[in-house]
Length: 97
Image (cartoon, rainbow, N blue to C red; front, side, top):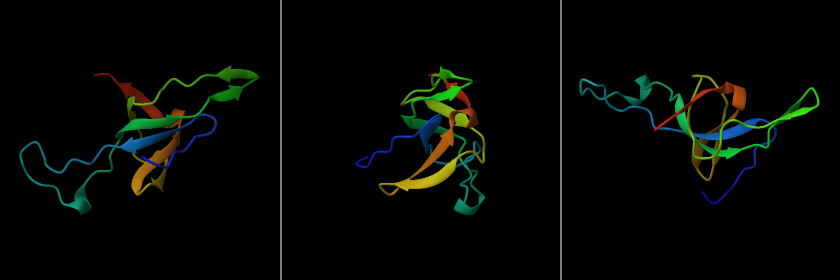
């Protein structure tokens, strides 16, 4: 990715994983019926936020695979790729392994 983005505060930039193209039974899913991905890879992390005069560090870091809400974040294009920028609180969890 040639262009870079530095998120501010408690925001993170996430590259969504591609939506499933096939069901477990082997049927192909048309583009119009695909679920919006809810899993992605963290590309960039902001410095954290200040809450009640105390700095709160970020829990996620670059290259973490995370789960987020279906309608979380704002879609933007970065070097022709669709990415999401969202608050860390929109992330539901970090996937291990």
